[in-house]
Image 1 (cartoon, one colour):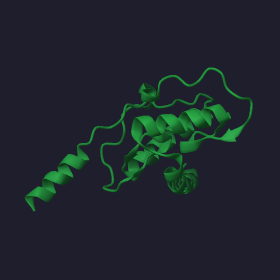
Image 2 (cartoon, helix red, strand yellow; image 1 turned 90 degrees about the vertical axis):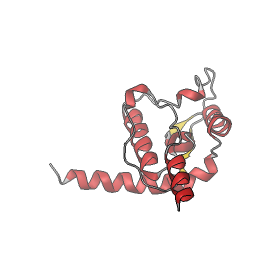
Image 3 (cartoon, helix red, strand yellow; image 1 turned 180 degrees about the vertical axis):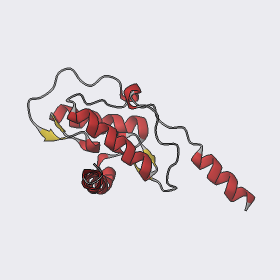
Image 4 (cartoon, one colour; image 1 turned 180 degrees about the horizontal axis):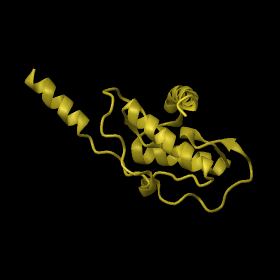
Length: 137
């Protein structure tokens, strides 16, 4: 029993990745599940993934997406095609698709393919959250 407790403490104490400063602090209380995180940030709780996804959507609404600081700067030269970007980042060039997929794999060991089912869940939760907030006014 004691070793199980130590494993849970160690798992919960896993260091969080660095997020854009403008996002503030991630939630203090998180679920005890383990899923691919939005934004290509690796793996963690679904509540953390929902928080990241929400911050990405806020950034996109303001026309200024922010990527994980650990990825470094995005490529300056990009193709002029428009594609769906992985990890919840909206739309962009094929160059950005390749860069995001490569950096997420190298830095956080997360693939775009494993995140796809989670992205569908996050989109549904975000829509549900928006609908419920419309009635609170």
